[in-house]
Image (cartoon, rainbow, N blue to C red):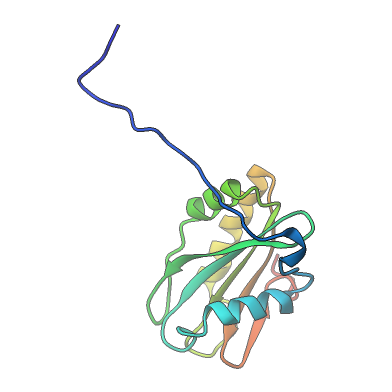
Length: 150
C-alpha cells in the first residue's frame, strides 16, 4: 500500500576524517587536554562559559573537538545527548570534557559535578570512557580525574 500524504526524511550520519593517525595529538594526561581546551577557549576565557569535548580513539589520539555549549557569564547548559551522539558518530573510545570559568575560580560548581556525573552515566551506558573534565581559567585549571572527582 502506498502512503502519499507524508514523506519520511532520510537520516544520514557522517564524519569526514582527513587527518592521518600519526598526525593526531595524543592526550596522555589532564595537562594535554587542558592545553587543547585553553586554545579552544582563548576568545571567551574571561568573558563567558563555553563547553568543549575532545573525542579520542583507543590510543588516546584526538579524533576531533566540538563546542557543545555557549553560555553566559556564570553558567552554560550542556545536553548530554549531543555529546553522546557525536561520540558515537566519530566512533570515539573515550572523551574528555573541558570548559572555562570566567570568574577565575577553578573550583567545580555543584552544576559542574552534576553534569559530569550525568555524562559519565551516559558514557557507561554506551561503552565510552569519560577520561576527565577540566575546568580552565586564564591562570590555571582543575582536573576532575586528578582531584578524585571521577
